[in-house]
Image 1 (cartoon, rainbow, N blue to C red):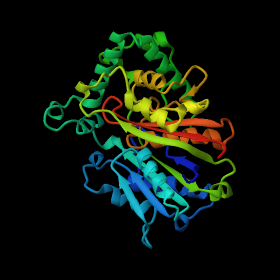
Image 2 (cartoon, rainbow, N blue to C red):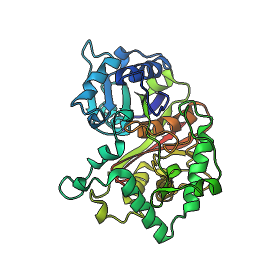
Image 3 (cartoon, one colour):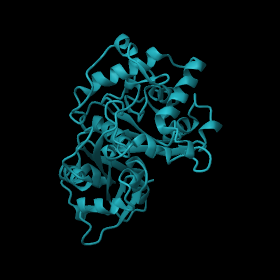
Image 4 (spheres, helix red, strand yellow):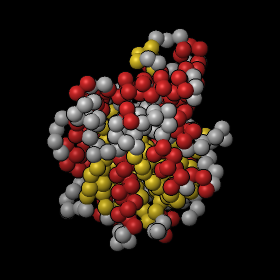
Length: 353
């Protein structure tokens, strides 16, 4: 396989409602920052791919409009996935394996303030029997959390502790300017439930935002970046579509993706997992064998700022940043999609090739 590295990462601030800018205006400075930080121009990029969801704006092919942010003239080789940008990064990684290009640009964006995200995510469900009931992602996550409580694999105090740590970590992250104030476990547990057993702090806040990553292959990566984050393993797997056919207290697709990506072939120092609900962070930590020695979601994670279609790509970028700044040598970025962690992608990155 060809060596490929994350050489730059940029993201827009996660805002509850970015009322001053449209999607193009949010994406443009992020793409510019990702390219400028490694001295590349759009003409140096052999492949451009994005991840977004037309359902957020209700406009078919809205991702085409976002191409204005990167400049599609002269014509560029371009693709799009109706998925989180992490899956766009996977497509770019595969494209770089062809060997005829050396650099790829990946970006994703989401403006969830324009819609009711909980209802939009219902559209991911089986269209004949489940989606017409409009159960919503929060209600389904509540069922999953209830199952985990009944199985004794988590407690409400465990979930509150995850939320408390997320709020504390997000205070130092400039990408989360509207982070909730820190609160201890007892204070969080005194608050009312929203969807049993979930309280507000257990649910990621929907935000607007964008992120971009540049991948570069081979020796060229070391020429543009002092500390490239080399992708040593990447894999994605999917569990069955119907939540009723799954044991929601486990996540086999996450475990298999982690194994195929080589999580166990060395110690993980920093892990950024995409968990939009507090109990899901605990579930993922178990499935990926992330023990107490792993610095888990030091950015604050999606529980601090959740831009749909962006949060997974941002997790890979935040993890790569720890290699770029020299604070870690082996990290993990994770992304999920679908109800109750149905689809999972794991990307392991290392400081050396």
